[in-house]
Length: 297
Image (tube, rainbow, N blue to C red):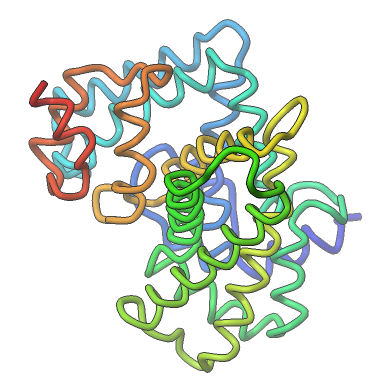
């Protein structure tokens, strides 16, 4: 007999094509984009020999060289960057495990009460029909990857003003959570608009639940002792998840600026120079300020 979670997933419309997507585009009102792409991407990165990661990179390079009609040039360029990110995940198992931990609020593949709890809480608050309306809006406006990008932005902003030893980890996390919640609500108010059939208070409730669940999960993404400095290691799993979850980073400013751009200039990620050049030539340069600066050196 299928589990209750499987039945809910069937009603809500999420499917393996969304979960395992490796190219742009998603219309899945079941997950609203929260489960888009990362399951397949992480499976490719986790393959022990690296064969699947290499095949993924070869396919993305073919997309760049052949320019299929189904992709824009910008999308093909992002695909090449994604291939380098998959290679990074394959090389650094701790990063892959950390990114997988960050998916806990969104992961409904197992009958585990701690996985996918956020999506179940939203359903309990809104009901199945209104949740489906919300998720239909969410996938259209990139809500879930926007949430991750703003969480990364909040952590990075906090890092810039951080002074070693002055604040405890729980205080730093609380501040980052509050900042992320405020930033996401501001983006909804000023750019994304309200989902049909839901009021601002309901959207604010979802944002509060989502940021709360995400920041409760983040300590699991860093192995070993958790000191005040280690909190900023959370940024990389969040950034990686935002990029691989986003249905089209080439059209999403926050994911590019707060996640893809810093990954491109991070030495450990080993994003190739030619890939950075492709991004700069085909995406808005103002979305990639760190990459643009590096190209001038």
